[in-house]
Image (cartoon, rainbow, N blue to C red; front, side, top):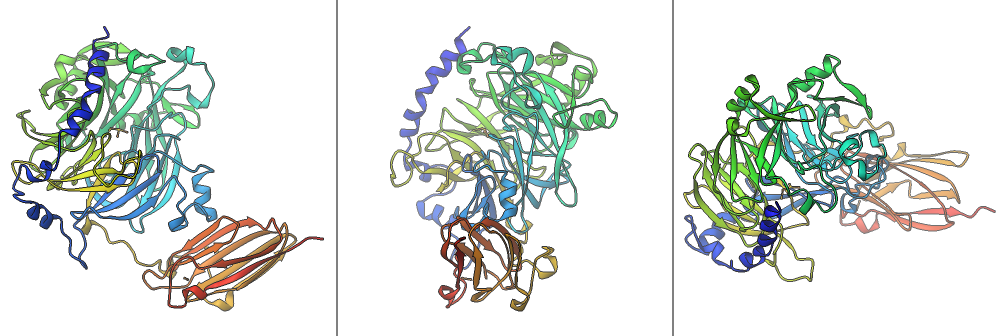
Length: 613
Ligand code: RUQ
Ligand code: CUA
């Protein structure tokens, strides 16, 4: 019975050995990169030129998203999401501070681009927070976080963010089961009082505004990773789960007892309909469906060996479930799944949810290799599966289900991303593999080794490693978007500034006082602030609105105030508000933090705080 655990334990010692056995050959071997020079030329982006693709890396528990260019792999931007970031002043002004809700971190795992008709439309990037059950929306017009939404009932928002074909929903699933509505129940009541959740976050088609749509109460398994259907399967979403044992304690043992876990298949259209028809109860402020009472919303599909990723092929016909403790990917046929549902070809039930007959829905197995985690697809009908234990990526043919090539990477690989790899029409051409363990690929900086990722050319019969890049910790998943899909703005047009305290000339700045409340409307332009003297009394509450009056690219002004932990950065045409209490008498210089002109250094003033008698 402990067979699977033993297998895992045995395999756990392998990775370091495998990773150490790989050296510079990675660059030289395979494909048609004949020489290092060839690989270098294919990744070289000359000065003055820009990359062809955006690469959005999740930043894990840094709470950020990192942007790099492909093929150069240069890190070009950091987008703070769940974490304050002084570089852009994020989390210091009132608005972004409120959005962070008092938290200073989140755990970003899976970024997902918005879609129209199944393909990336370049409007938004959504990311999940595995730690604090949130989803955020980044606007790709200005690469800024615009909204953070909390998902009630969801405990550990790991199985997220997965965007439906026309960005109707972001689909999520809970990693940790817990009592719903934030209630208390001891862990000893896990089996009866704890639940998992599958959630649909509704996205407003125009504004992108997210709200809690529907949720489905699930058995207390651990839901892991998923993907949404496409084409024929577009109304469905799929997640893997582990812990079919409903166990607690040391899960590596207790949750590895049964030979099979489950893939969840959720018909999100049916869930939406059930809510409209009043078949859901309000729990924790969200409409929650009990699948035992509302048939047709979810089904379970058996999957061997603690599956991790389940990834739908671009044509929407197959789902590939990667069993991380078996050397294979199990392929399910969506049509067979529909037939099994129609014929009620079930092999059992879990909390009233039908379990489809494994033999009826499974169509093939791909012998990919050891420790398969995630699969992405290209435009030529191939799947690419990351092999954690083998430190390699397997390429296999959809339909033949045969491995056609394998490329070693210099670390235990986690996620990989193919350009456009989870859209209806992948771009292909490049794949990026991301490290988990055994990095050691950069100059040593001590025990916390730099992370790395590998750019692979996938155009030929053989995959070719082109470049190895550093990424900030900790990369989980990524998305690749064609550069010409978006045209980010360079300044905020004045006409779009709806801040009630925006001003467009220095003479409109003012200081008003009501008792202990001081309100300052400030104007910033090259290279001075107006007003330059902020005179307040000890204990005053100061509300400062700063408008950057520039309409020129990169003319950013910052407002750094000594000893108050205040660092506001205002882009051209933007107005930001910051509120603070002048607690301690004294004189505090403020200055512009962003170099803005030859006389940037002169852009400074004083806050004087007069003692109370
Ligand atoms: S999971 S290494 Cu958080 Cu994306 Cu698979
Ligand atoms: Cu404004 Cu420097």
